[in-house]
Length: 465
Ligand code: ASP
Ligand code: MG
Image (cartoon, rainbow, N blue to C red; front, side, top):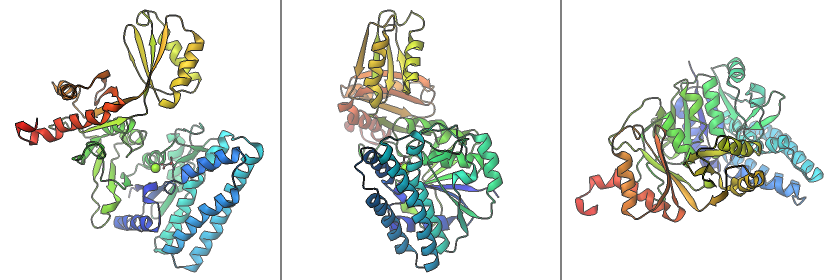
């Protein structure tokens, strides 16, 4: 029988109450599972802060490690009464905390953070979660073991901070190491380089770990347990009547994740799409009773009546505008500019060009750095470089969006009705998404207007419109 890979995130792992729900969810399956876990809520951020403090020689490593350990021990004691298991847990916890402390002390000592050490330290959030969960599950009588990525051979390309899984090697290793009559708990968020170094899979990367593991094992499904009702048609903080989207294609889910939807890491769908393994999203609050996913992501392309399935946004975009009358005709300007940014490790999110302007969409944090790099290079043909900030990128996603007549027109008319100015539109670059840029101050109104037009007004009387 094929495994199901099941992932629990930090929002499921806050305290003993949260872990009780996790145990219930696991019990619901009634079969051995491969379980991937994130760090406890907030722990990765705490580790990042601790590294910075250690570098500035301001960290009390004893206190820091003690606080993390106390959280884990208290949670364990609230859940498990078996003395032997508690003892085993404490013993292994001490070992891991001792290592963590030594790494932090090392940073204080050398006042520097080598990338390999940064990745190693950050992986401790997940390593402590898996250690705790395996002991809790054992106390519940579930036959399980912890399986660390280094022992399994979850191999990456070795890039620190943002590694990619080597599927070929990892699949061979994982299929050899995991027998399918037992439950395994694997810490997410990291894999191992060829040289055996811990390499992180990017922030929020435990979804991607779980997806990579599911792909390697040819799993039946990847089940992601969240503390939200599923993928929604819009952010419920902006739109009161957002509805759950019951099914999405891999491409739709990837676009939504990339353009701001927090529910899924953008790299999650890709490994599974190739093998047609469904991603099922569950709400941990509905853990009682039958296993009914809130949203299913698979390869079935469905064009719904509304066409648009969800509208999401991201504020983490800025535009670097390269201006010059020749940018559209002079060869090489785009290549030179992008390779300079690439050399500086700056990730380009998108590019939209015209005859006189190249608009490079970047993360906020890279915007001014990119500007100064290109200004220094003084590339022939670019006469001016401007930065455009305070913007939001809105993405409307749905299969059929770029092929069905009138959908984009309807969407932009809805926005225009509110007198909102759209700065840039990208239509057709992705077959399932249209994205455009508005001033940040107009973001919420833009989203509600589109959402109203497609999801609400058609159910109302004419006066509402
Ligand atoms: N703990 C890691 C992070 O906060 C990975 C994850 O939660 O997915 O980025
Ligand atoms: Mg997470």
